[in-house]
Image 1: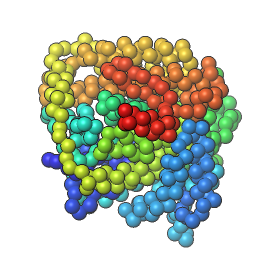
Image 2: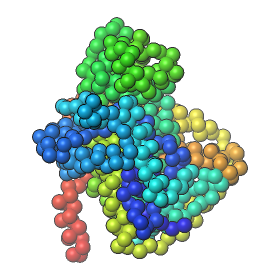
Image 3: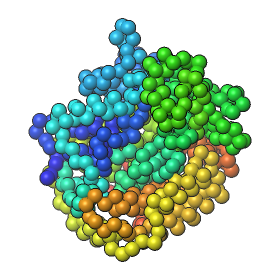
Length: 548
């Protein structure tokens, strides 16, 4: 089947993009690696930022300033301004799609404080905001006639003469390679924090697959070294203790009962403070007892139930032990709003690096970014598809993918790929985590390089083609290692501390690093890291190159 627009990714950005791309005449499909109901968006619990009065320029400018300040000097003011100004209309659109935000007695949408924000601007649905938005968008997408294609593992982009021509995917049900031709493609596959396996709120299959695909397609990744560690995850299960818990008045205390940090500071500051307490041998807890059972069950019902079920802790009466966990990735594919160097290809959501988060994401902005730029990407793709025809498929890439899969099914493995994934997660958390330095980064690079080499000798033990989970796991591991190497190289290059990137051998920010790094894979295993060129310089260079 051919489509006018294909969207890859079933989170909020992908769903918004698909809904906006669909009209009465065109065909739009949404591809997901697994179940459509499973995404990081659906697990985002705290809320979505917005100044609800679009005429309140003072508050909108404050939202812009808060976001830009949180970005620590490398935010894109144009993208930030666009996002903050679109927020009110996005909330209105979500309400029209059926999202039931919490409201006061006058039917006004309630807003709570969030870390790093100077005003109460975070709209919410209890502590399940992401899930509520996701479900409303799925219903809207189905009502508009969007085709859902679940259980498709995207292997590569199909392109022809720098124009996108479709998607090459693995049908996970039968391990067959499928080509989906399309006039326009939107990538919205989420971030890469899942590579910090056992130390992340993300599902293990969030391994940066589409970022690795973007590298193989010749695109650059930007700000890849900036990984945000959420300060509060369950010690036992990594379940996210929503920032709403602190927004509603929760305290952070150590095992001596002392508060040690402003709970509503930016996430990088709070996460480092917690880690330092732990390195001193102290445990850290979130204390919600003073809120009372009634308020907790009204404002934080999901957290109350999760703590009881997963930890056996009644948070209205007991302290809940927490730890920082990898949660969100500011880096991604280098884009101008949603556009990139490949015509007809648009990228949005967490996997895009458009500059709205810079070095440190402001809490409550991730759902907003996904909605705003998903909406924009969908509109851009729809217009592109109207004005352009299908491009040819380069079957040389398809043949290579088929040969790669055949090789993985052949032969026997002596290595346990699940053990490698867990080992990679531990290495990244300890050496490329909240605190880094040249020694730990070098050690991590050497280990990842070794793992990347042996990953190409892995084979499926189970040779059955139907629903072979080993095949997907091996492909995810390869992608995870490719992205891990990129993170380390960029972190080594940034000899300073800025936002979520903290090096104790360079504890201060440096003016010469007030720019983004971009990384490109020249060929398999060979990366080039450099400062991103200023757009004006890039335009001038292109003019002279075209003249020649």
